[in-house]
Length: 150
Image 1 (tube, rainbow, N blue to C red):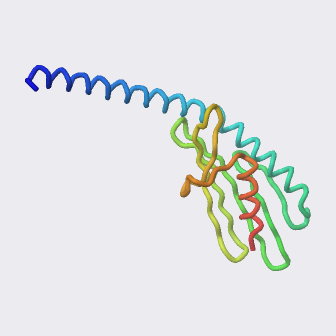
Image 2 (cartoon, rainbow, N blue to C red; image 1 turned 180 degrees about the vertical axis):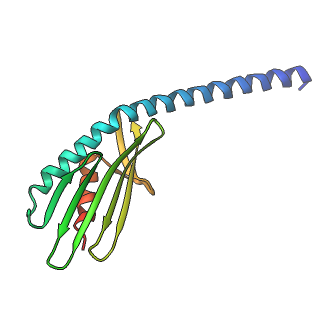
Image 3 (cartoon, helix red, strand yellow; image 1 turned 30 degrees about the vertical axis):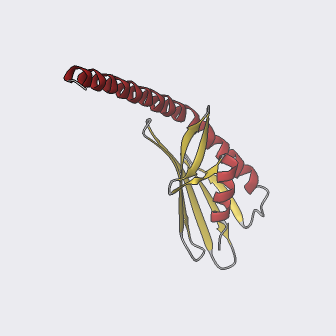
């Protein structure tokens, strides 16, 4: 291969790489826009699910309290109280997370859910394990399990 062929091939490779990177950035930006737009709706669905399901549990054992950007679930037994706080965090297009912190009941627990785009929907997963996938109801089940552990 002579020098001209080498430079021509290298130039073509660089253009191809640049276009691929540009497409990747465009897709990431579309995904960030979709997450920013849809995550608050999933948060509302999660809160509604938790509120509805907790009303089906014994009211003297499990309570639900909604605050500005969080939910607090209290599970009380004859011996102890377990308080679980669920917080929705969205910082621009960079961070979207639902944090769960449970205290009391023998052991403390923490979970964090993050999301990504699948098609035109969001799918949520553990921040530490992306193989387990959840919709808002699935997150709610996991949160109630953690909140009532003890």
